[in-house]
Amino acid sequence: MVQMTDGDMLHYLLPWYVNGTLSSGERAGFEAHLGGCAACQRARQTLLVLRSEIEQQGESLFEDHPSSLDLVAFARNELPEEESGRVQRHLVLCGPCALEKRWVLGDAAGQQVARTSPQRTSLRRYFMPLAAAAGLILAVTLWPLLQQQDGGTAGTRLVDVYFLDSTVRAAEPQILQVPADVASFTLFLQVDALPEELPLEVEVLDAAGNSIYQGVQDDSLVRDTFLVLNCGRSDFPDGDYMARVRSKATADAVWTEYPFQVRS
Image (cartoon, rainbow, N blue to C red; front, side):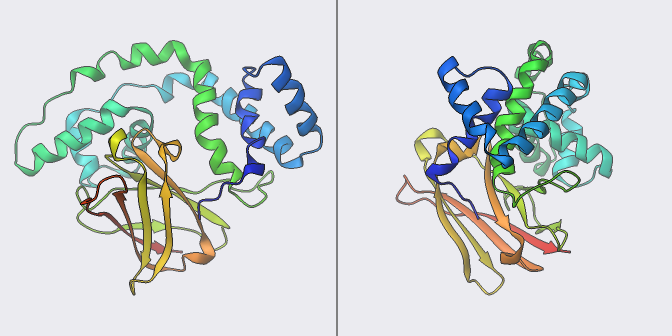
């Protein structure tokens, strides 16, 4: 599941090394580490490619926001697959759109016309000049996931990522098509936690109600509106599961549930 040790911390400097933002002392120390760390050498090449792609494809990464109607259709799983993927990728990068998705879903349930969030209008103008800096954003987001994979090499899939909505937004369990031969996959749970509600208690149950994982996630593992769990495929054979999250800081906190099915 989620793994973090003190020995990992030096590895986590790699994104800042790639982006040239380490101090001279940190850079020298990391270069000494890099010379003897095959995993960091491989991952450095991956991050360089990611940064290059972001710099070249920045326009598509920071394209126009989806309309409120598209957000409603996405929340109801009514968009075509290609368009749904575009909206999903956008929601990872755009907090205001992720928030508006929650608004319009509530409005749609009452058959009202969804309103457009005024905060969204200027975000594209704000982000476009930061295409190069986006390389750091993506590297920092993906690097912990890459670190938790088992020895990724060139030509292999480094990370399988799946996004989960809670029962507040998704009436049916979400079906995850996870290849049986991958070592692990990553779940992004969309959460609505306020800073004062952290840390978060997390549990994953199988169909029989047995606990597969229990843990506490601090704010360093909640990226914007997503909580990230890395899952070993061997721990999740095909079947039904329930992830659930609640505030550990609130005595009467209730569980928010994320039902899902794993299929090969």
